[in-house]
Figure 1: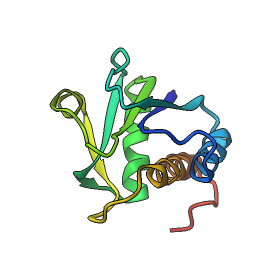
Figure 2: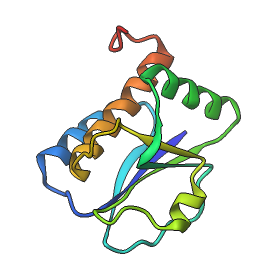
Figure 3: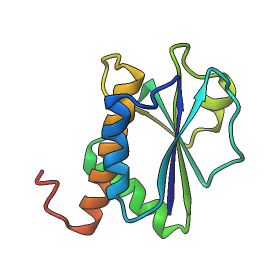
Figure 4: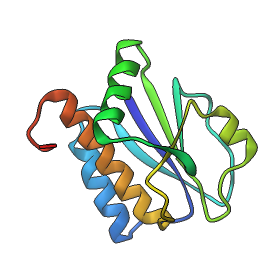
Length: 136
């Protein structure tokens, strides 16, 4: 399985980006963050596209882990997470999403969402691996 986080805006060199990259580096699967700037070009289709949006569903860490397990069991090898910029997502992006995910009702800074998402991806994999990182 391969993880790509497609992130609007610029964050290279920020503390939040460093946190996100630390969590992604801990994964046993390839993972990366790709910045889009203000351009809204999307890569070719991934096996799974997840859009982070305030209108999305709130999943517990265990529920997100269960989604990963299902995708893995189904042989889906590339998961693309899309974090929008300050203007949100286009209808095209929202239409491609298999899952629209929110981190609660609050509005979060885009750079902080990178770190939060990377941590939740890491946590999901530790849950699946039975690692004690998640003690919930």
